[in-house]
Each structure stands twice: as structure tokens, then as C-alpha cells.
Image (cartoon, rainbow, N blue to C red; front, side, top):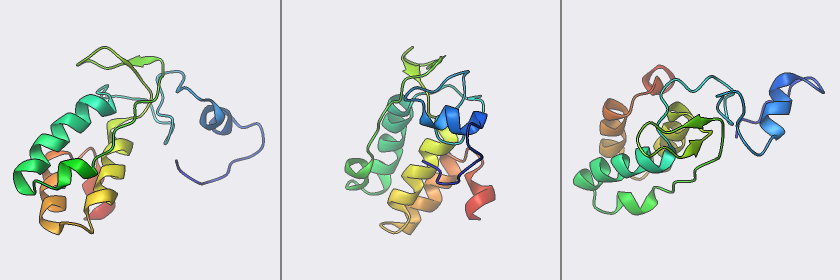
Length: 118
């Protein structure tokens, strides 16, 4: 999770210390989840795409679904991590392993990552 510290008792700190994402907000960045696809469903799509480029990459993708007030539009499970934060984590996992796959990943699973990395 993001390591910045806010004032004691602030709303953002309360949200980050909670085990579940509340108010339809991401447990990592605290932004409202606007693309409700859980990390399990998104991770499966990522594994399929990256496996076409490098068969070893799907094993590097670890999904972990955090509970929250939002429900995945694909499988219906509770979720609390936004697509941007999950995609950012996966990008960090693959960028040093396979730069070609990382570029293709940004093209397919952008979620505003190009603003950060390009």
C-alpha cells in the first residue's frame, strides 16, 4: 500500500487502516472504484495476455482480492482494490523481467498507468 502519512485521525488514514475497503473506495489509493473488476478476474485476463508473450510470466502474477463495498461486475465478489492499483503492482512485477511484455501490458491494461510510466 501507499506509504504516505496523513494527519492523525484523518479520513484517509481511517480508510487505509480498515481491513476492508469502504464507501466504494480503493484500499490502496482511496479513490472511488470506477472500473469494478476484481483482481482475480483482471489477473486472469492479464495472465492470458502475458502468457502469449512469455509463457513464464503468468506464474509471476499473484492475485489477492480485498473485500469491500464494491462488487465485481464480472464475478460478483466483493472487492476493494481498484484496477489502477492492481495493474500498477503487476507492472512493477514484470517490468524488469521482460520489457517487451511490460510495454504490451501498458497498452492493454493502461488504467492511467502511461501517465505515470511513459
